[in-house]
Image 1 (cartoon, rainbow, N blue to C red):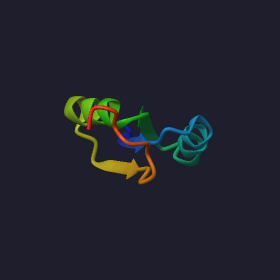
Image 2: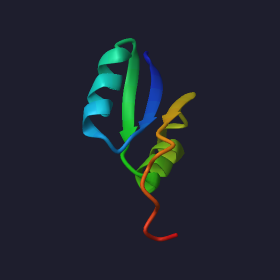
Image 3: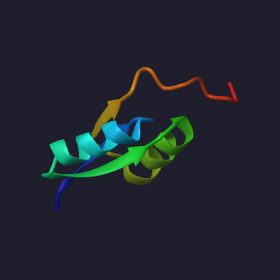
Length: 60
């Protein structure tokens, strides 16, 4: 079983590149804060990469 890597990134091109860069991992994505938090709750990934420049959350 491959280890899970959660990529939190809003740029589709960077998401594709990161998936390609980690062929030995099961790469899952969160495109924004809510989807990333949902993936963390569901999968409890041991590794997360986070886009520090995500747009602000509209709810906050």
